[in-house]
Length: 222
Image (cartoon, rainbow, N blue to C red; front, side):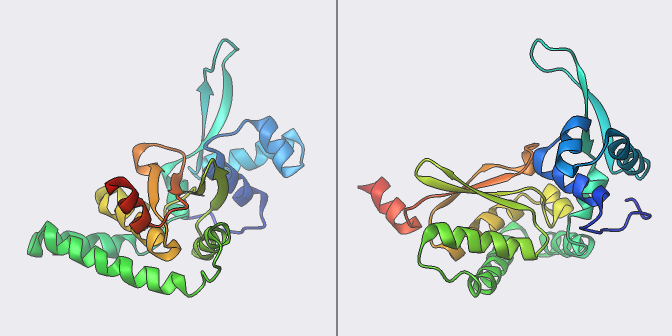
């Protein structure tokens, strides 16, 4: 990890990292337009971020056009958006798996899911689903998670662009299922995970149906 880098949400360097985290990659021109600064300024920030090991430049081949350079965040940068409890949590889960087995670990994660859902639900009060999703996004934002909310047909998509327990989820995909379960419990609607960072996607997409989980089950059985 880049020990010399300090998180400052007002700094152009951190804003570049957030932009890349949200959009997967960017060209210098795109970063110029985003920051409203000169090419030279963008290059200086990128050079510093590359020296810290947080950004890498790649040659991108797309369509029939000429190859171009784009910038991407590295795993070290993703760790800046992660929770610093990963090492302890990963060790605890490893030990529990060895001592108790997969079934007991699943029970533990279910209890953690219930507690997180109860805590988040205190801030999700609206009776309107669209507003509930926005409130859920705000709750996640308070945890340092970059989010967007979009309408997609009859559904609402809650997107997250960084994982608060990146290393943990890499080892235990049950963490992704727990995340999905937390959002579903808080919103009281059916939620599916259509994209996941652990599968190489640029972010996680939680598709929120207007039907409640019970209504969706009844419809499928009917």
